[in-house]
Amino acid sequence: MTNTLDIIDHCTRLAPSDALYALRRERLKIVESTQGSYDAMFDDAVVGVSVAERLSIAKHACELSCAHSLAAHYTQRLNKASDAAATERVRALLTFTKKLIIKPIDGDRKAIEALQDVGLSAPAIVAVGQLIAFLSYQIRLVAGLEAMQAAGANTAAIIAPPEVLGECLPSPMHIKGFTNEVLDWHSWIEPLHLEEATPEQLAAIDAMSPTAKNQQYFRMLAHQPEMLLQRSIAFNAIMFAPGGMPRAERELGATVESRLNGCMYCASVHAQRFEQLTKRNDVIAQLFEDPASAGTTPRERLIVQLSAVIALTPEKLNSAHIQQARAAGLADAETLDLIHAVALFAWANRLMLNLGEPYRLDGTLAEKGQL
Image (cartoon, rainbow, N blue to C red):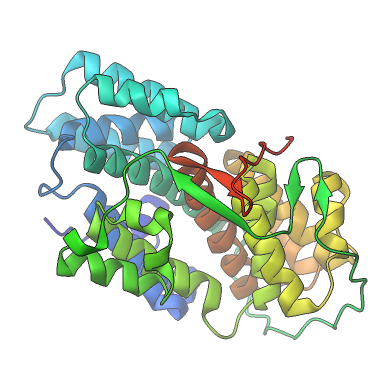
């Protein structure tokens, strides 16, 4: 059942008269697909995992993340839930939730098997994985907006940052388990067979990209087509919408999140995209080597450092971080674009790390990156 209340506005107490409310709606597709994702995650039509079980997951994830306003929201919904959650299943679900929320790189096939042991089907496991990953995004978006609220309105216009004439180092790079070479990814859950797909499943895959049907990742996520559809809309709006923060800097934020989570696959893809857009990869080498010191300019270092806070300690985001971004030349619209990009990869990394694993194109398993 669709919820008419925008949960992000509700939990951040944004009102239509607020400048930040209006700034959010400069990216209306993101607002709508974020809410659409929330609605899909708790839709009564999702089978195999009850609404009460999903709300228990959400409450636990938000409490673990010190996301107080979201935790209060999900607690209230859980208290009103009409269906009961089975204790053994809930214990397994909360164990899985904690792993994905706290240290997603620890995900493995045994964690998936533990969910199968308590009766979860492939579509139910995809629903659970999507929910926890979405919550990771939602938690960071709320934290970022709360920090921006605390910093107060700023009407500074976006000024194109100066072009950085950095170095293009030899590729592919292999640094501490991370690479910018092309990788493959194999699912631990049986992907959808296209010849058996429903029109809704095919539409959800196609909404991502023309090549998505060739990837196990998207065919696996298509077990929950509405969740995939809303995520695809959000992904494309966050990473490719014109204006705002330059695309290369959004790719850098995505790569920072992926590097810090140890998601080799996502780090490789978005390192490649950064290199394609900028014709350089020096900052990628720095990031793979030592995220704490990466960046070739003050603006770039700020982007890396702010992305790291959003990624690892969103509960510590505050107005000082927003003021530092402004001092480095970021307009608030650019900062919000960065928050969206990093939060999106908190979502993507948790799916990649916990529902499958990366492989090299020669068919060998790629080792996990070093945190």
